[in-house]
Image (cartoon, rainbow, N blue to C red):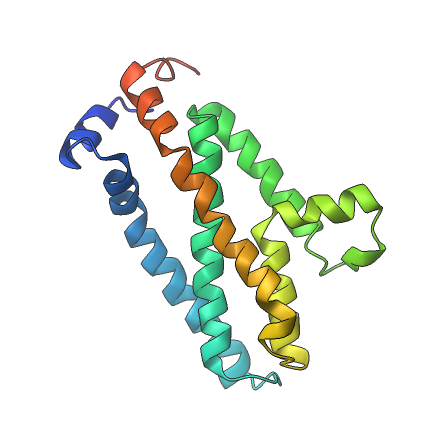
Length: 177
């Protein structure tokens, strides 16, 4: 949209916005997953930080977190497809997600409105799953809600893709500075 090449991008994907988004994000998805798995290996393999589960659950959680985070980004960009606006929004979402994740301050002891708002960020669910896996590996019974929530981030992103396609084809966001 910023460089006015979105029409060509859609044409390359046969005007299928799902294919276009998948093609655009796939290299980043692979790269972020490799970085995440490598980070898990460094922390828990090389540095030998103790953890209660195997590498497979940690890496699967990392993969799901990467995809859920990208889905949230697609959703937000589909709502506000102007670069100048979306940079501000994702900066706010990123800082709030990190703040409300429960790492620096226990989420259950936050004000109720803030506690419930923390569930709107994928990082919160990622932290909950990882705390379970790292400190006790209590099993799927304790993490299924967070795993489901990470999968749920994908649904709104897919459902709003027609709005993004309409915004691209309308060209109304190209001149926003």
